[in-house]
Image (cartoon, rainbow, N blue to C red; front, side, top):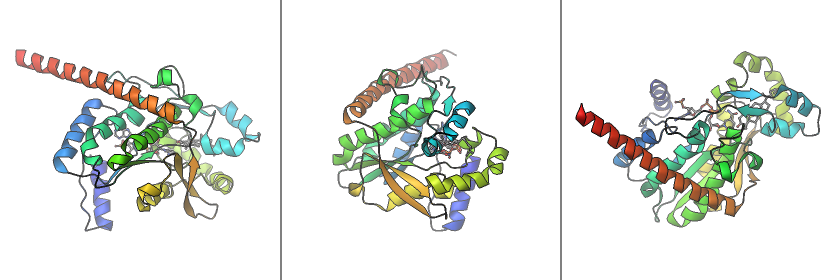
Length: 304
Ligand SMILES: NC(=O)C1=CN([C@@H]2O[C@H](COP(=O)(O)OP(=O)(O)OC[C@H]3O[C@@H](n4cnc5c(N)ncnc54)[C@H](OP(=O)(O)O)[C@@H]3O)[C@@H](O)[C@H]2O)C=CC1
Ligand SMILES: CC(C)=CCC[C@@H](C)[C@H]1CC[C@H]2C3=C(CC[C@]12C)[C@@]1(C)CCC(=O)[C@@H](C)[C@@H]1CC3
């Protein structure tokens, strides 16, 4: 919570009238999500905006050969914008027995939304969900037979594609109850996530090249401030005016101007509805396992 305290202090320095509450939440743990949601429900009776930004890309491996091949191909701009074919990750199982990337980037957020539905779905009041997705989300990385991506090497791409589909399904099912969901991509931003792919000194050395590439793609937003452009832009829009099938991209021009642009997502209604039901089924299993585990713990505690 130390970093959260520091962020809170910084916010209060720039906005002294703001009210900033902190809450501990590990989206990669079902138990933690349920506990945090209980706390939110106890503290508040309405949610206006829920930003689902937490995400991981563990053990990323860069395919150097594919990078140099792509560099001299006609696909070079797309390669820099989406990293298609460049990255794989090694995923692990978490304490709930779920794939960690799936659990953190998608399922934990799904469970949180489900728990907070009473605060999010009020017919007389619009609530907004915003997912931080990625231009790395790709249909071919996702399989309905393996939604957790147990058998592949691109769990990040798969989880982000799943979040795009889930957003569409939420809009279809919940717009009538006042809940609206949108998806953004912040572009390539220098954060701990990118420092996990290549070391920070390397990024510093190639920074002039990155500014040069920005002229051709505009997706190299590079700073968290620039990357947050689409989040801010969405905040200012009327939810009914937004396209549920669009991903809103933060972009930065060669001259450093920030803007937001919608791009159609490569998703279909049937598949997103199927994913939604799969997630509901998995939720039942996870809740059952948790309550059995908690009952066991209680019984053991009483025996001691
Ligand atoms: N950087 C980039 O180029 C891009 C990033 N994104 C997405 O942006 C989002 C933010 O990533 P970014 O800032 O780059 O990466 P960082 O690794 O710097 O930050 C990740 C954030 O997610 C939080 N987080 C991670 N795991 C958990 C968890 N189990 N429970 C709660 N919070 C968690 C971290 O919290 P804490 O600090 O407490 O650990 C941190 O705030 C991610 O969803 C990422 O996929 C999308 C496109 C491009
Ligand atoms: C810029 C140069 C000369 C070298 C860097 C090559 C790659 C490390 C880099 C190229 C495209 C980048 C990229 C991402 C990570 C780093 C790259 C692969 C992301 C996958 C990071 C996370 C995301 O969600 C995507 C939006 C990024 C897409 C581009």
